[in-house]
Image 1 (cartoon, rainbow, N blue to C red):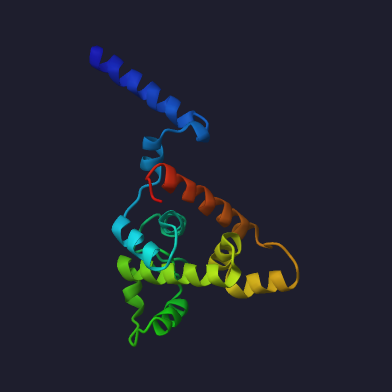
Image 2 (cartoon, rainbow, N blue to C red; image 1 turned 90 degrees about the horizontal axis):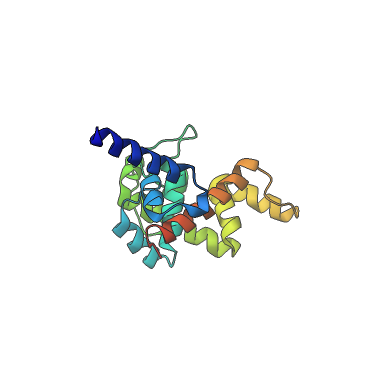
Length: 178
């Protein structure tokens, strides 16, 4: 009977934690809900490309939920969901002389290329919001919107930016990824 009461109490405590307001969620809950993998690779490429590790982790979570074998309906591959043509361009710009699409399933290479691309977009747009918009919707779309003096047109892209920004906060606070 005590065992049943213990598990019932534990279930109520857990349920209470799950339904509490997002701002009141404890770090352990955020760590369970938003796992972090490939920490050393993320930290290494963050340092190499002068990026916040939490930003890389947030993009990875949003793009693939840390699944290196992820593939989208548009053909984007791996942890950071890179299109093969984009990755091929990155490979050429970073001194690669041989590019294989299947290499994008390798976490180290995918995070390296994705980090290089994020740095490129941040340098080009000079702000994280537009860089994330370009990561999601493509540089051509962002360039058109900016040229026309419009904001981010796609609702999906606005949602993407909002999610990545929130995830970045989670990875800083819950995983100490600064």
